[in-house]
Length: 231
Image (cartoon, rainbow, N blue to C red; front, side, top):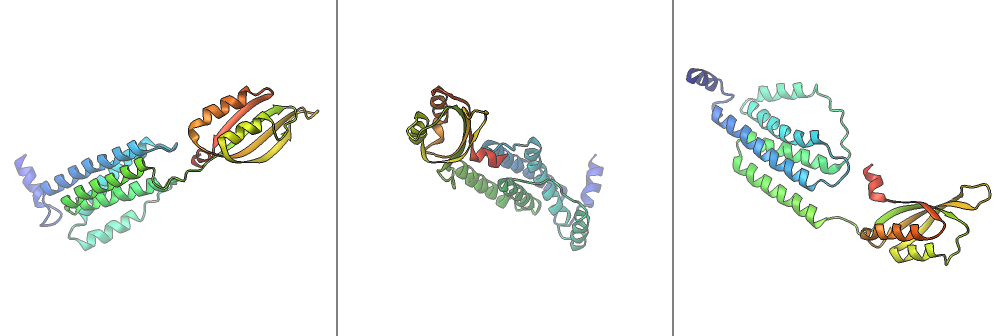
């Protein structure tokens, strides 16, 4: 076993890189890739969660580290590797720009580990994770306008001072009637659609409850605009 290790050590990629450095780079990239993946998992809040993407963050970090070790000190290998990678076509569409940010972070961490800049890799990962956690908990960039679409069917005529209008005014900043379509031959039932700017999203259940209690109202649905964008 020792002789085999010596043979492998003799075929190190460059005189400055030995087997222990390679193992350390791969191990550190694996650990830091997991740290990044855990931060992504913990801070993810959209609907498009993917287990394979979380695992890919770890694998990409290791692969980039291995690539950097492979091309270390050899311009010819670097050019050949670029030509080989140019044959790969990635067809998956990444919808969330935040996912692209995590992919780029994984690449940079892998580059730092593969080039044996271990202190930079550790400090950089810690700094990136702290920034990502801050942005998550501070909800940085969130615009406090809760836009929603309200749809319901009402049996009868609805005057401007109807309880439905009064209820909507209590829970919204602004409301706009988008459409009102008759759903019965005698116009006794009308489908209404409203675009709402809610004061807060915390009272959605209360809003729906009060609307449903009004006589003649049925088929009530409330959809937040943010949920439509994620779909």
